[in-house]
Amino acid sequence: MGTIKTLNKWANTHTYIPLDLLRVALGVFLFIKGINFMANTEILTQLFEPIQSMAGGMLAVHYVAPAHFIGGILIAFGLLTRWAIIAQLPILIGAVVINFVGEMHTNSLVLAIITLLVCAFFLLYGSGKHSADYYFKMQQ
Image (tube, rainbow, N blue to C red; front, side, top):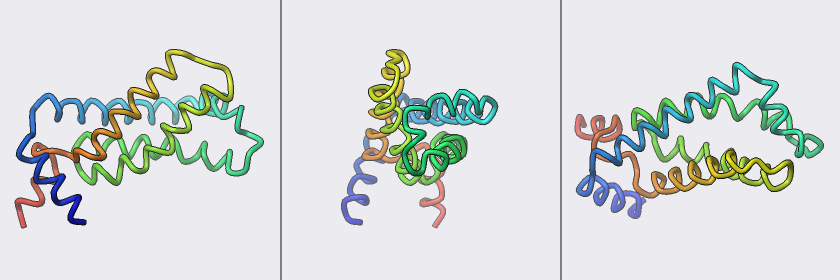
């Protein structure tokens, strides 16, 4: 807990508008991906074909769309950012792995790696000063 407080103090003193815009863009991107997966479930099931025979394959299909949808909203507003990103990490790691197990899509692989790296950054950095977390903390 002390490490998280130290990271939050550092992030709040070194906050920049471009980083907050990057966090919002990440949240909007994940939100749009969640909507896309909800609207086109066939695409999502095609993505999971390489791991369909594994246990929990159908559970993963039902986890991805709502996690992107809700996590994207939370990340965009900066509310429970670290928790929302922790929920995204298994999906993004799975997106990278699926590209190696199944058919290789270079564009999807690059997009998944970039999103994973940005999520890892915000997992350490936090939501920043211009976020709902910071606003609610200051209201106490």
